[in-house]
Amino acid sequence: AQSVTQLDSHVSVSEGTPVLLRCNYSSSYSPSLFWYVQHPNKGLQLLLKYTSAATLVKGINGFEAEFKKSETSFHLTKPSAHMSDAAEYFCVVSSGANFGNEKLTFGTGTRLTIIP
Amino acid sequence: DTGVSQDPRHKITKRGQNVTFRCDPISEHNRLYWYRQTLGQGPEFLTYFQNEAQLEKSRLLSDRFSAERPKGSFSTLEIQRTEQGDSAMYLCASSNGEGLGSEAFFGQGTRLTVV
Picture (cartoon, rainbow over the protein chains, first blue to last red):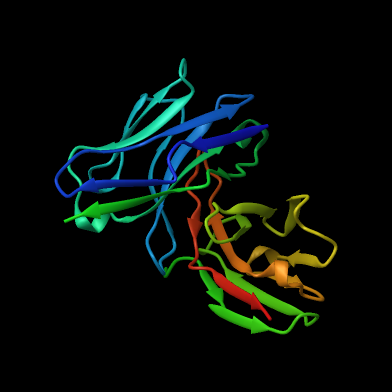
């Protein structure tokens, strides 16, 4: 079984300040972890992914995430928020690579608001 | 390639009617997924195809739901005797299934409203 918990349903930060979106996961096997972003009226877009290589993962648009096995966490960060970062963010886990099926299990999402 | 395409983008139907959605994945992607997303929730897995074979169905998928992927290309999702609880965004995704954590590319979804 696999699951993710996004600890904040809504995060507000001022433009130019750091962003932290928190995610904890549960997986019976070595997981692959992802962050997806969903802008209004747009499809889900992959920000970054962790697949058992380097624990610090860099993604698009200046985002990065660190895999911490001891804490079962995969928090998403960005040093300086931009107005265009306002969107819904989903933490996603997949353990299916061990079985040849990479079903994705999504968290409930964190809505990021950027204050001008 | 224009990405994953879904049709229609919006569908309003009366309760009890049947509806069918279509998904065209990225060319040569062998894996195709259907997800459902309701307001304020993350997408929930419905079913998954490897080429034309439907390998897994979620318990969320009642007998009123059926999905096909003939010839391993496009896929259809049909809902029979729609209920108001079926109102949601239906998302399709595809991947090439190569290596760990192969990226799933999502379409923009079909928004279903049952009245």
